[in-house]
Structure formats: structure tokens, C-alpha cells
Length: 169
Image 1 (spheres, helix red, strand yellow):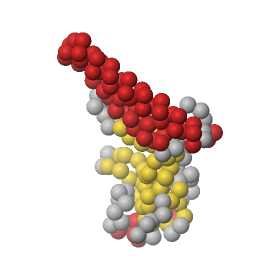
Image 2: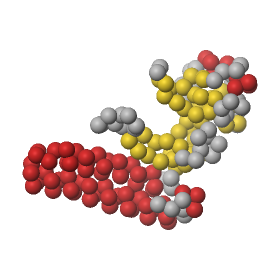
Image 3: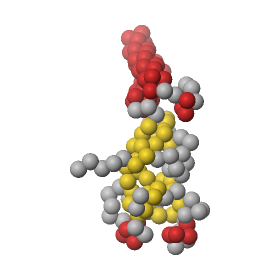
Image 4: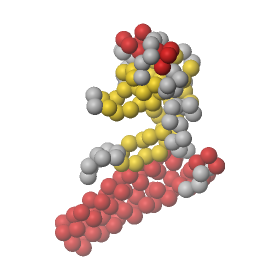
């Protein structure tokens, strides 16, 4: 794949087609393996199906020109430099060191899944809003043999390239 900053819409769609074909090939190989050896090839069949699954997510992301919907932390119209992290007690916002003074020296703020009910976020005048961001997709790290597919920001650690999705009522 080319450098994502140099890709045109046609490049993204060509990548989507490549991932679609890879997904179909992996799925067909899994089916062929089953036909050849029934369940004796279960491990390779499982792996091929998992790769087919991941390739479909890559295809979908490419059809969206490398952009995925995330939540961004906002104060009014200003995107706060913060990133969502997973800790021992679930998700939270990690504030960039330059943002902490404005929020009583806090390093972390609660992640509220965009539902707008956090008293702490409201007390600081903050909202979690939907954004489009450059992204990629892969299996979750350390997720075990059946880990979920996760989207993550690319070249946009603190959300500086997020584009706010305008609400339509």
C-alpha cells in the first residue's frame, strides 16, 4: 500500500478490491481444506477464516478512504488533545500534558462512550463527539486466539487530525 497521505480515492478503492479478493481467496481455501480433509485441517481452516474476516474489515476501511468513526473529546469547538486508553478499570481519556492545567491538573478523565452523562466531563464543559480519523484495523493485541478486530488511529495519536462529524437532526 502507498503512503496513505499520497493515496487518491481511486487508490483506496483499488486497495479495497485487493482486500476483497484476499478475503474471498482465504474463505475459499478454508472451504477447500474442509472438503479435502474434513476437520483434520481445523487449525488452518480456522486461521484462513479469521484472515478472511480481517480482510473484509480492511476492505470496508479502504472503501471509506482510510477513515473510521471514533469519539473525540471537545470543549466547545476545540478538540482537546486526548486519547482513549484501556486501563485496569476500563476505558478513560488520557490528556496530553499540555492540556492538564486547564482540567485541574488531571491526567485522566472518564470515558463516557459518547452518551453525555458524565458529571466530571460536564463539570469541565467537555463533550465526546463523533469524528472521522485516519485509521487502520487489525486483531487486538494480546487478545488471544479469538481476539476482536479493533480500529486505531494512524498518524493521529492525540486526535489532531480528527474531523468532526456534523450532527444531522
